[in-house]
Image (cartoon, rainbow, N blue to C red; front, side, top):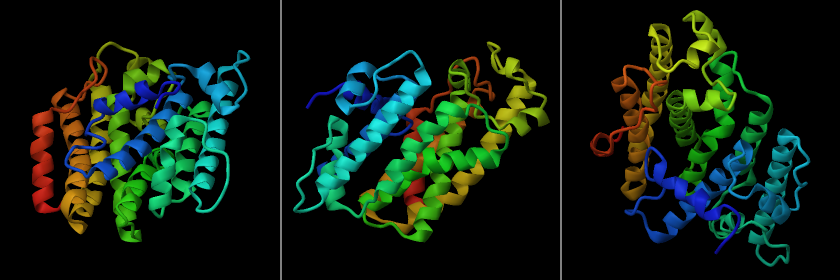
Length: 304
């Protein structure tokens, strides 16, 4: 199965804080998780301008070709992907004759849509998050950043619960806390990279509170004020993780191990940020895999 950027998109799974579809899961479940990851990565790459062949993807989706305005082009790609998402859900309906999704990573969604009680909403939220990225590059408050995470992160956890057929309102609330925490931690790891893209995910009111300017974030190393700010946001992420972690204890078996791994990935990333002295500018803090594995085992055993 080939397609514009497909291999490059899926290859990014190996660089995540925790394996997207670890080998201890049944093959069908791994396929479903990789299909969801492929969708999310494809949408992110379209929104970030990271597609290996953006022009080819636009042609494939029937989206407008590049006319010089990057934002308009990316929004057109996202609209094309949303139309392809509609095709995927239509193709999954039994007894219907409809156009197959045009992108290979979208076609990979069709089997899981047919097998599980998933709706278009979480997929649409991920697309909407990337639309927001085209026009919003700063967040005034932590609450506004959390609102963005309800689009960019929380849908992934909801999809994992739906694929396991264990989604309940209580589990969804805990999952949202974990996913928002993971997104906040990732933003802390990526401060320099995001700034290079013209984006800042550190809340503006917190930057003001700690006396941090945008110029400070462009420095080669973090000064004391930046470190204090990062430590403050890391503590917020840890609180969210602590709140959501009991989700692990509500399930059993391989799903419990998977959720323990995701949660441990957040704690390990936070530990990496702390080990760097909260200097996220000198280099991107990455979690230690041995520590991650030990933390995952502890969370699995305790159920939180």
